[in-house]
Length: 318
Image 1 (cartoon, one colour):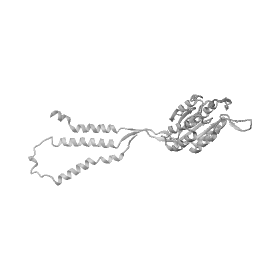
Image 2: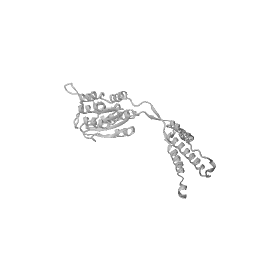
Image 3: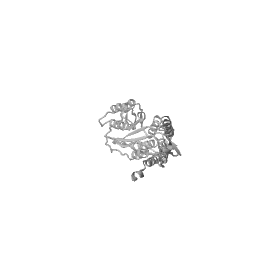
Image 4: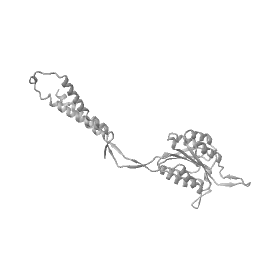
């Protein structure tokens, strides 16, 4: 299907006729009256080249105007997913994530195995979102930058192993790295989901300091603590891995996010389902029509007729 991007440009087509009319009207007003037309020498070159040059110039002008109108070929409509959120996931892979206190489909798993199984399904559901992955222990590192390729994020998430980033937990530094990767994205779509089973025991930034930085950059941080309750001999409840719930709650509160606690696989599934509701993925498709311009052909034809006006054969003859 052919289409003009600027059809109003065709209004320029009558300009040569307007110029010709104006030039003729000026001649009739101030024309020089000759006593006799017969006294002029006859020459076949005095009229025919003039008409020929005008005809060539008119064709060149027509193709120039067509080029200005930007003709293009419009293809069949295609659907593209509407761009959603820029969602960064920060996953704790410190030594304590190797504890086997989670059960998934009848099998006892480590905390990291359970998180990978649930979070991988969450990633695959985020159609239309850019998803990235940060793994952290003693230090954080970017495993996958923000991308629409959810399969790649799914692969690297399942490839994460305990202890690769050290055995300590640098929660504050992980938040700081996520903010750095999200700061150039649209402000309303920046989201970080941080999952840990421990306290901040390493790094340069405290979680509260990193949360203030995230707030300044409009990054919403949802925090997830994982681990089972254990009771001491005196009846007090403690977490098996020493999770600092107060710190994680503070981070979520400062940044406008939400804190979650998951003590088993079922609760972990519920957490990610609730995150789907809090941060819904893009819905619907955007219709896109591919367009291929071909105005350069009109410009080439215009240039060809302009070269004809130069009459190069006359140069050779002279």
